[in-house]
Image (tube, rainbow, N blue to C red; front, side, top):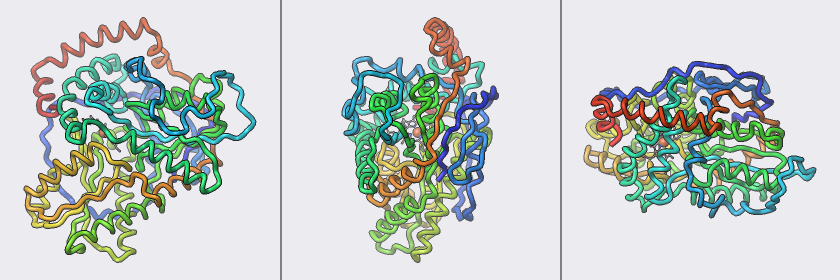
Length: 491
Ligand SMILES: C=CC1=C(C)c2cc3[nH]c(cc4nc(cc5[nH]c(cc1n2)c(C)c5CCC(=O)O)C(CCC(=O)O)=C4C)c(C)c3C=C
Ligand SMILES: [Fe+2]
C-alpha cells in the first residue's frame, strides 16, 4: 500500500503544463496484444507528475524514505462550488455519520479526545438526467481532465461549458439506459457504512465521510463536516485501486487546496492512501469474483479472461508520468498469479475502454479487441472491470450493453461479466485494514496557495477571464476543423 503522510509543503515548482488535449481528429490504429506482462515491482513513477504547479514532500509508509512528489495541476476549485445550485443542501442523503456531533462553533482548536475520520473519495455521478450536463461541466472544468497549458487556462471553463453541452445528449442516453442516473452515490454510501462497521469490528470507532469530485456530496461538503465533527486524525481513501492524475491525483489536489489556508485543517494529521491495487485482500477478492463467475461457464478453462480498464489519454502516461498504466498491468499480473495459484490457467487480456474526445488514449481499445477476439475464434469471454470498485455507467451500460452486443456480433457466443466489488465483505475488510495500517503515519498536510489559485478567488479577475475566455473559446471552437473533431469524437 502506498500511503503518503504529508509533512508540509516545501516548495512550489512552476512547471510547464505542456500536455493539453489537441482537438484534432485521430485515426485509431492499434495492435492487439494478449497480455502476459511479467509481474514487476511498482516503479515509483507515481511520485512524479510533471504537470503540477505545486510540490510537496511526503513520507511513504512502506519505505519511510523521503521523496518529492508533485501532484496534479494548478487548482481551480471555483467551477464546482460556484456552479452548484445554491438550493442543494449540504450532504443530503449522505452517509449515516453526517450530521453526528455537529458543532456550529468553528473554533480551530483540536479537541483532546481522539476522533478518527475516514474520507472516501470518489468521482460522483449525476443522479438524474437533469444533472448530466452540470456534472459534465464539473468534470471537464477539472484541469486534471482537460489539461491546458498555463497560458490557456482561462479557456478552461468556457471549454468545459461547450464540451459539456455537446456531450450531454450522448451521456444522457447512457444514463437513461441504466435507470436515469448513476448508482455511484448509493453504492459509495453503502461502502462507507460497511467500512465503518468493519472498523468497529476491529475495535476502531470512526466517522466515515464521502467526498465526490464532480457531484454531490462534494469533497468540500465532506471536509466541512469533518471540521464540524472536530475530527483529530483523518485517513483519506480514494476508491480507485490504481493511481491516476485524472482521478486520485485530481481529488488530492482539491483536498490540498481546501486544507490550505485553514488553520484547523492544515494542522489536522492526515494519511492519504494513494493507491492500493496490490493489497493482498483486494487481489484475493477480485480472484474470488473471477473464479466464481468462471464456474458459470460450461467449459470454464476455455474462457478468455478479459480485463477492461477505464482508459486515460496516452499523454498522461508518456508526458506527465501518470503511473496508471504500470499499476494497471501490475494489478492484472497479481490477479492472474493469484488465479494460477488456485489452478486457474486461462488466457487473459487487458484493454482500455471509455475514451472521450479526439486524442490518443491508452491502447488496445476494448471495442477493437473484442472484435478481433471474435474473429480469431474465441467463443467464451468473461469481462472484468478493473479500474473501479462499484457499478457505474461504464459497467452497466458500456460493458453490459454496448460491448456485450459487439462481442456477440463478432462471434463470441458465451458472455459473462464479473460484478464490481461493491460491498463484498472480504474487500470491505481489506479497506478497513488499509485504514488501520495508514493511521499511524498521519501527519499535518498544508500547502500554500499559488498565485494563479488566488486569482481564481478574485471575482473581478474571474469575470474578466470568463468573458474573454468565452469569446475566444467560441471563435476557436466553431471553426470547421473543431466542429468536425467534436462530431466524430464527442457525439
Ligand atoms: C479509474 C477510473 C477513471 C479514470 C482514469 C477516468 C478518466 C477520465 N474520464 C473522463 C471522462 C468521463 N468519465 C465519465 C464517467 C466516469 N469516469 C469514471 C472513472 C474514471 N475516469 C467513472 C466511474 C465514471 C462514471 C460515473 C457514473 O456516473 O457512473 C464521463 C461521463 C459519462 C460519459 O459521458 O461517458 C466522462 C465524460 C476523462 C476525459 C478521463 C481522463 C482524462
Ligand atoms: Fe471517466
